[in-house]
Length: 537
Picture 1 (cartoon, rainbow, N blue to C red):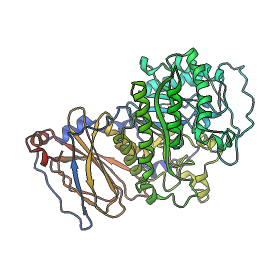
Picture 2 (picture 1 turned 135 degrees about the vertical axis):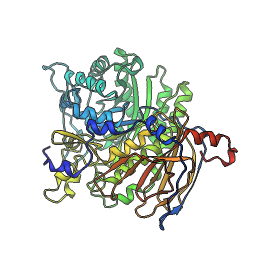
Picture 3 (picture 1 turned 90 degrees about the vertical axis):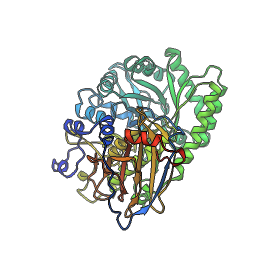
Picture 4 (picture 1 turned 180 degrees about the horizontal axis):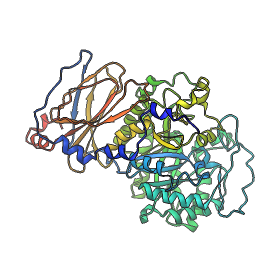
C-alpha cells in the first residue's frame, strides 16, 4: 500500500526507538509520584460534574496476567513469510512498544481457508463446494502455509518477547492435514508449558457462523461442531499428546458455551483445554449509521452478558476437571468488517479500547486480542474488499489506515501505531496487577473507573471520561497523576499518551480524557494508619 510521506507528518503515531525509550517504566512513574510535596488543587471548571469514588483494596479481585495485551491477525498474513519475521524490524519494534509480553493470535475468517504445504510439491486440497469466506463477493480463497513462514514466525516471537495462539483450519480441512501442520508448528515454536512460544491451537474461526458459508444451515449445530472439532483434536493428540486447545472461538453465541462444555464433560479422555474463547465487536457493518462515535462509547450490556456466560462455562469446566480453565476474548475491535473511517481510526477508538480492555481485565479475562493487520489480508477475509472504503470520497483512502481499526498500520515502508494502540498502551499498565472493586458514581457523565494493586503494593486507579463536553470533578487526596490519554477532539487523528511531570493532585478529569493515578508510598503509609471506614485507597 503506497501512501504519500506527508501522511506521516499529519499523524503522530510512529513509535520509533527514541519515542519508545522516552516512555518511562511503571517503576519510574511510581518513583516520580512518590516524591513528597504538598498537593495543590486547581479551580474546577464550571461544567465539572462531581463524582464519588470509593476504593476497596482489601477485597482482591481478578489477577491481570502480565501478558494480558494481545493482537489478532488473519492467518492469511503467513502467505508473506517476511511479514512475521525477525527481519521485519519495524513491526518488531511496534509489538515490543505495545507490550513486552503480549500474545499474538493467528486466525480470523482466513484460518478456515489455508492449507499446510510442507514441501514445494505438495498439492492443494480439492476446492470447496461452498464458499469459504463470509462477504460479497463470495470467495473460495485458498492459500498455502509453508515451513518458511513458521520458522520466521518463531524468530519474530523471539524478537518481540510475545507468544502465539495458532489457528488451524477446521472449516475446509482434514484431520490428517491438521495433525501434520500442528506437529510442525509445535516442533518449531515449542509449547509454552515447555518454555516455548505456542500457547495453544485454535481449530476453526467463529464456528457458530459456519451455517452461513461452510456448512448446511439446516443441520449445523454445536454438537456437530464438536464432532468435527474432536476428530481434528484426536488426530493432533495422536502425534502431539501435550497439545493444548482453545474453543469455541465463537462470534458471541452464548448458547454454544454450555453445549461445548457438556460435550467436553462427556469425553472419557478429554483434551487439554487452555481457554474458552469468544469474539466481540461493538457493532457494524461500516454502512450501519448507528455505528458512530457516540454509540461506540456508550456502555454496551452485551459485554457483561458475554462475560457472565463464558465465566460460568469456564467455572463449570474447571470444577469438573479440577483444573482452572481461563477465558479470553481472542478477536474483536470497534466495527466489524474492517472498521469504519472516522470512527475506528480516531481518538474515540483509543478511549473505547482503554475502557473495554480494563473492563475485561477486571472481569477476570486472561487476555484480549484486538484484530488488525494489513488491508490486503483483512480485505481477503471479507471476500476481497474493505466495506469502509465505500464510505470514503475519491482520493481519501490514503488518509486512513487499512484496515481502519488496526492497532498497527503499515504506512509506506513504516509501521505506525494507530489510535487503538494508544488505548491498549493505557490499559497495559494494569498488566501484572491484581484488580480490586470500586464504587464509582460519575453522575450524568459518561465515565468509568478501575483500580488495582501493583506487585509493589502500590495502588493504581484509572479514570476514563468518555463524555464529549463535561468534565469530571474527582478528589483522591493521596494519589498523583500518571500517564494521561488526550487528543484535541474525539474525532482527532492526533493522539497523545503523556506522563505528568508534577506531583500536583488531580482535581478534574477533562472531557474525553483518560488518566492513571498512583498512590505514593508515603501516602500508603498514612492511609494504613487511618480507620478502614475512611480509607480512600
